[in-house]
Length: 150
Image 1 (cartoon, rainbow, N blue to C red):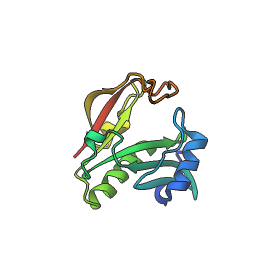
Image 2 (image 1 turned 30 degrees about the horizontal axis):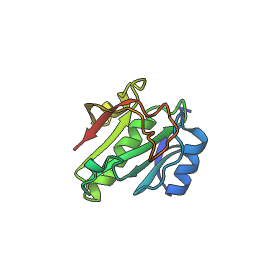
Image 3 (image 1 turned 90 degrees about the vertical axis):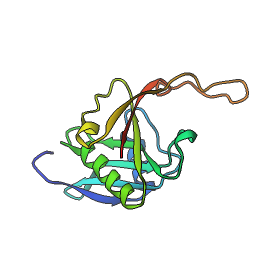
């Protein structure tokens, strides 16, 4: 796959969510979003990113965007970095002052560092299930790392 040029292409939220449902390792589609961006190779989508409001209500100031999903097929060199960079450029052009995202401890974060994001620290974890709001436990409800770019 690396012998051809990967290009940034537009994507609808619907198309990006279909890609996420088909290819993401541990997440399903998002419930909503502000915009989506794709990368393509020879006219075929090989990665997507979905940007929305911060999931944490404490961070939802109206000036912070969150990359809620990023999914790139294996073998697409620098695909994640391309998408993170494109998302930040688009969000900044829309007036956002900061962008955040989260990774699992098992994910290294090289593409985020390469895109200019800074590791802020640990976030999340715990169990979302309680008697008044039953939830199914998920492996993504563990400690995560928060990254941001300004």
